[in-house]
Length: 200
Image (cartoon, rainbow, N blue to C red; front, side):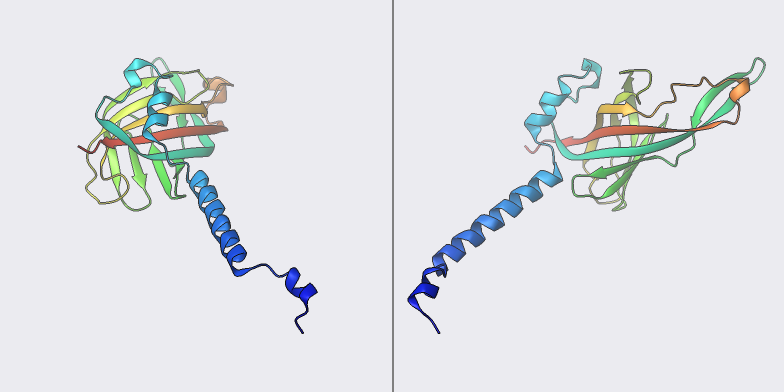
């Protein structure tokens, strides 16, 4: 039974529609914040804090941002004989990253650094410039990469920039004959920006 008192507490159709629109807008805004895709302005501002050798040249725009957080496993190994030299070598199968849409990537550091996206696209460094931010941190870098032979998120990437790294390097103990074979797990954080040619 509809009484005047019951109808007084029932929202109108227009009020329900307005609330639905507001809710949808709020959800969309939260989703956009969660993706954390870089803007051109943000990326250019962020790189101003990096050494000039790591700046991406003009004419390129950020296509993708990836974040990494986890642990890297190292082992103390002999890298040279007579006389012996020792070094902490990375045993982890690459550094795990996640792009703004939640898709995984893997960064394989080294002289032939490469990045592999979960969609199958992959790029390799043709030129690599590094800068040490702190001895216990992975180096900051700028890599010029060749084109991917597989379509996907990395297909149009030409530069990759590490603009923030925290940890990821064994600071202690030193790798010596007394620690040969020791394994150490080191936490790290990393932030990478992938750049492609700006639209003409």
